[in-house]
Length: 220
Image 1 (spheres, rainbow, N blue to C red):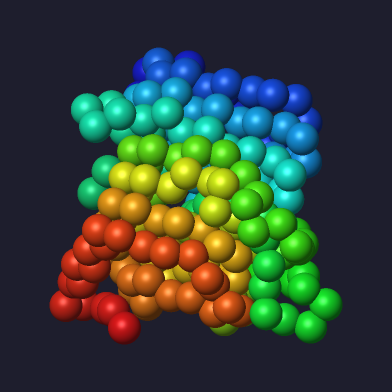
Image 2 (image 1 turned 45 degrees about the vertical axis):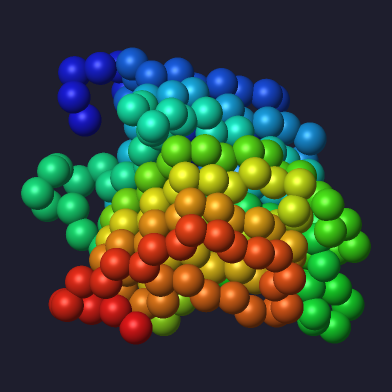
């Protein structure tokens, strides 16, 4: 991290919080945005996922993530390792849990690595708005043979805005839909180690303008 102030984010976010550019933010361990709480990331914000503690950002059902990036000032979530030393699987990734339907018995499921319950009966559920976000070098192994996806949309509803998002150099999948009704528009999945785009558990949303760009060293 540069000479800017370093703010460590850990544990739970239990009140509405806004992060602004000009500060370096470090995700330490699994950080949860709790139900009823909105986390807002303004244009130009960079968040570093801490490798040593498996830094990961998780939005609970009923929580909201608002990413206000712009074309020239996207929001970036990336590795805390030095530039040039970053690699797939340096940190966790971004997991959003919603209340939209799944095709599993009981209608809800538990996220990988204790990342919370997802699913429900609300197809129009709103988990926030994400525009101009890049997530890079994520997909750390949370537990043996259990690597995280870059952006896991778990029971996310169609009320959520997901546009202009890039997943880059993730160790497991890039974008993965676990059920839900999420609509994803303008998405780039680059240099992903496993699937660029994946869906399971009855995703019934839609996608438009997707690019998958694979590197020769690893992909599916």
